[in-house]
Image (tube, rainbow, N blue to C red):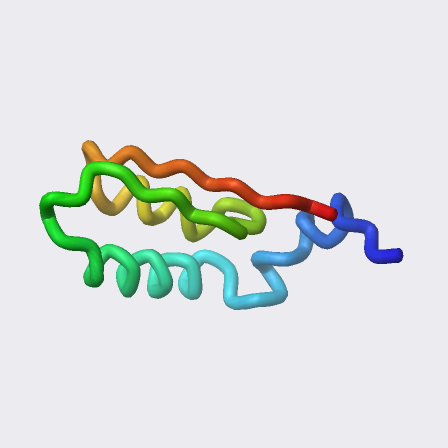
Length: 69
């Protein structure tokens, strides 16, 4: 069985890290109309992209949810 706690420690580094997260967040933010005030990220994994989305648009309420199993 996969050890999700261990996977979380290496997941971002093995999948492009911060540069990938910043690019993904920029893509999402580019699709959101200015009137959007909240965003739910379902399946957010470690939350790295979710955090970059929140940082990229102050005032946007961002919530991330992920089921580890």
